Every structure is written in structure tokens, then in C-alpha cells.
Image (cartoon, rainbow, N blue to C red):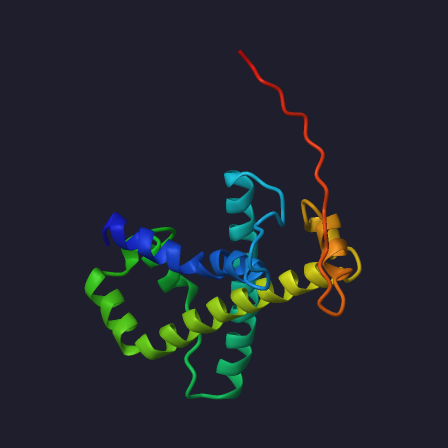
Length: 170
């Protein structure tokens, strides 16, 4: 299997983490100031959320494949072979292709389910940040802005006066 396919499989496995952050920003129309981080911090968040989502998905899938015989069990050996990790040499490319082709609709259902779960978790976290529930407001960089927006009642306008220090630099 080529390196390009390994990259595609890895990006698909990270999709729930990416969609978590899309869902996190979707309840709010303007600001993306939630969760202060760098690119490396964002990547760590994507990997963590993807790992947790796939752990939950794998657990549910394992339970269902034991209860309902028509649902196939996830074979981590094939996943590792697709990522060219342990045991990649054991399976030929033709064998992996036939396994993936025969389970294509189950794989698609799993990917869509975990991606939707990642988005839903992000959207829920975004809603909890907006509502200020428990400690979720601490994730917002400028939490005070939600207090100002919450003060808006009955169509009245909110006026904000911003003090700045404008200097001319020569």
C-alpha cells in the first residue's frame, strides 16, 4: 500500500477531531476565540477527540457485533495494515482491497457515525460555553462578551465605549 493511502486513512481517522472544532464554533456566528491554543495544541485536541470518539465507536461496534451476527466486527489487524503499522506485510494489497470492498457500507457507516459524533460533541460544548454552564465559560478567551450579549433584552441596543490610546508614530 502506498504512502498516499496511508495518509488518506489517517485523515479519515482524524475526521471526528476536526469536526469537533467545526461544531465547537458553529453555535456562534462571529467569534472563534474559544479555546486558546496554537497549531500544535489544536492538533493535540484533534488527536485526543478522535481517539476518544473511536474508542467509543469501537466499543459500541464490538458490543453490537457480538449481539447481532449480521454486523461485522472491526479487525484492528486490517486497520493497522491500512496504516502500514504492525502486520502490514502479512496482508497483500489485493486481500486488503477485497476485505474493504466487501465491508464498504459498514466502513462508510462507521466513518459517518464517528464524524457526526465528533461534530455533535463540539456543538454541545459550544452551546455550553455560550450558556456559561458550570466551568465551560473558562474555555472562552473573552468570556465577558457573553455577559454583555446576555444583557441584551427586549430589542434594546447595547452601547459599548472603547478606550484606546491612539498615538502618531513618526
